[in-house]
Amino acid sequence: QVQLVESVGGLVQPGGSLRLSCAASAFALDSYAIGWFRQAPGKDREGVSCISSGDGNTYYADSVKGRFTISRDNAKNTVYLQMNSLKPEDTAVYYCAADPKYYCSGYVVDYGYWGQGTQVTVSS
Image (tube, rainbow, N blue to C red; front, side, top):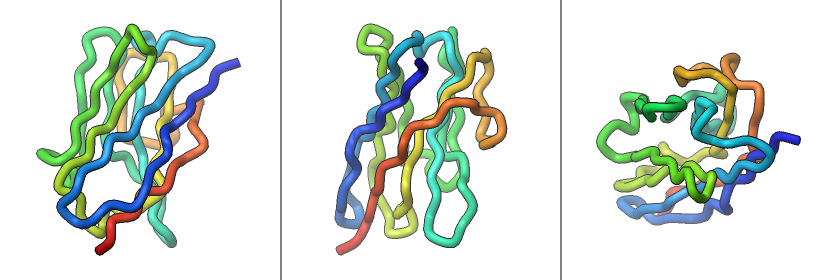
């Protein structure tokens, strides 16, 4: 059974950093496109970053470019989202998602497997 388990998020001060992880079971992450999404209260779920299978090409939403970094550790079967210079507007529930295809995308409909979500709150 395909499962994605995200690490616990947390409360971070503006300007701080946090790393989220997404561990997979029952499949090899490097053969799936992986996406990170977030959903703030009252807003649609939006794509934040993704990494393609195979060559690991990455994508970032403009709102996080230069601050967030997605990476994959094949040995640990885990994908990470390093978030730096966090802003209050980054507050949301963050989800990782996976789909057995090569190219990743920032669209919710392109992913068939989802983690449970983890809350990230950026506040002083």
